Length: 113
Length: 115
Image 1 (spheres, rainbow over the protein chains, first blue to last red):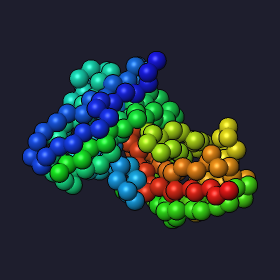
Image 2 (cartoon, rainbow over the protein chains, first blue to last red; image 1 turned 90 degrees about the horizontal axis):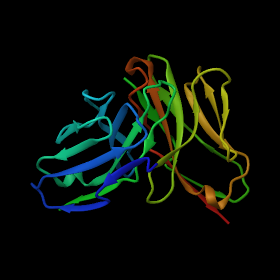
Image 3 (tube, helix red, strand yellow; image 1 turned 180 degrees about the vertical axis):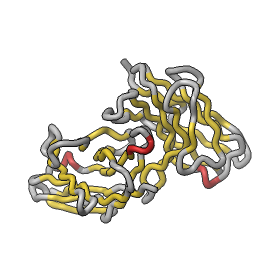
């Protein structure tokens, strides 16, 4: 049981390049999330998927797209990376139960030059 | 709209001293409240949560938090800290009007325990 896994762990991009961050969970969770973490700002929700086949915007969705490929996988795509997207990105998942908490992946550290 | 405020960005404390990390939230609907801990270069881990019932909740490693509805606060306390408690702590809420699916985080408090 690996929990929540994220790939890659580190990535450096040039401005304008595109990339996809991958996230997978093996806990049969319904909900999945993408956050970015910036110093002094905590975690901010980019997108989330409450169940397979649905996605919703969070607080900071601009410049990102997501795909809930199946129940296990939830990817985050940067179509044209900008330096402002330099951040640490965390994926999380949660059961459908309201009282349950989220389980976080180890993070992807992205630098956009 | 929801918001979570952690009033202290950094808290230095000596080993075996007590500590309190403050968290206030703003919400027009009922919420569940959480504290998470993040060790360097790791993801977040749940420390404790308040859902309903007794307003005092405890974790397995000696932390406790008290929900105060009138003050909209959920402060985290530990009577005696250890070096190993050095980490960043995040307060979070999830409101009822998102079916408790959407989470809002505070900006974090870095706890630095000195020997």
